[in-house]
Image 1 (cartoon, rainbow, N blue to C red):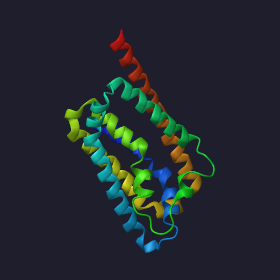
Image 2: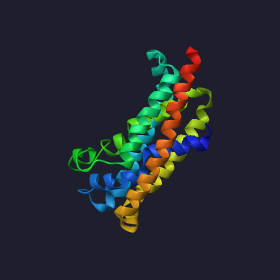
Image 3: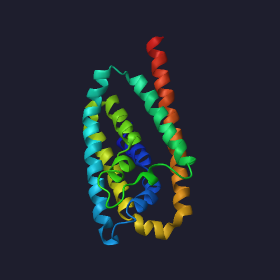
Image 4: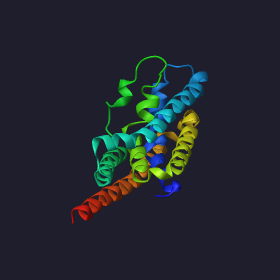
Length: 198
């Protein structure tokens, strides 16, 4: 996996276009002048959480004695479920209705909208395969986070300019790409397991 492919995977998993309406909903009771400041704060918190998981996740795997093939298959399965939800989202319910009143702090914008289970699983999977390339994985995480932050920081403008239909179409396309990546990861994990047992 290259830095570019890792950054693309993390960008797809963070799903910035799908998060735009969720961010707008979470900030609906906050003064518009404070929106960008809050979004930047939450993005920084999410970045810190992702970096912490990037460097501590591999130790957790060793403690639990989880093999690389099992992690690849599990990661592919989790990403596949996330991708299916992006392509076929539920109507009503979900995290958007669980947003606490007032100004959001950490929950739900930083966690789980940006640094959610799928993003944490992705950084864990990337780092566990080749931990010696951690500078490259950190660079990939930084690139995907920066692009995600750029989109979310301008979420109000994008929501007004693009409209709900265009944002939905972009999220569906990102979901389809993530489906292909997830299936490849799942197949790789199964193939590695078959080789190790054969």
